[in-house]
Image (tube, rainbow, N blue to C red; front, side, top):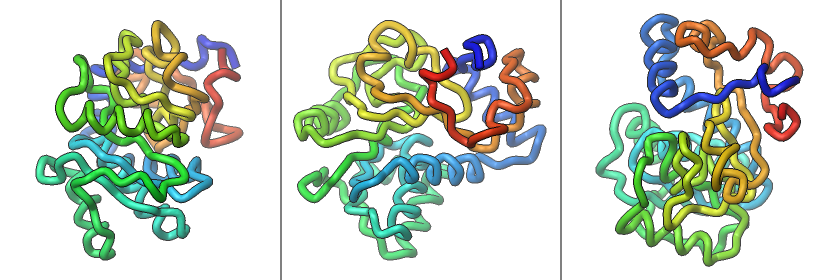
Length: 230
């Protein structure tokens, strides 16, 4: 597969595709979030602590946490500020609560075999601050393997600039299509081994915004190693 067969998706295009997928094709964000969570959970081969922010990236992490719970691999779920979760992400939080999964407002990594980074996705355009920055530093200082969702938290998904601080991921599971920041500037240094995961976005949604991903990107596997496409 050539690099021309695997285009990137900017942060603004991600929003367009999400909107088209729901409004034109009737596939709700909840379904994409479920698929994203399942794909991420598959990369967790040890007991995981899922660390969430406040947006849809957090929702992906919460969905992953539910699958990890079913597989006996969930150590803990920590959320910077669960009161700020909205929409599909808030729904994922509610599901976890109904399953009696405690979501902590403090960061606990002592029992983690690995960390799932679900703090920031494609919407970040400046350096993390406050508790976000504090938690990123703690994750990096822990030395534990990190599975990042879509992009490592702190990395600008478009420019590839790694703000201070940025999560140093072991693996990044990028959703649908790779983000340009993963393959330029600081991206390769902080993203680890990057995998592109199918989350059920129809190819027609990409075509509608002028992104030609091809109809059969995931014909052989539902995950593709980015390095193998370059």
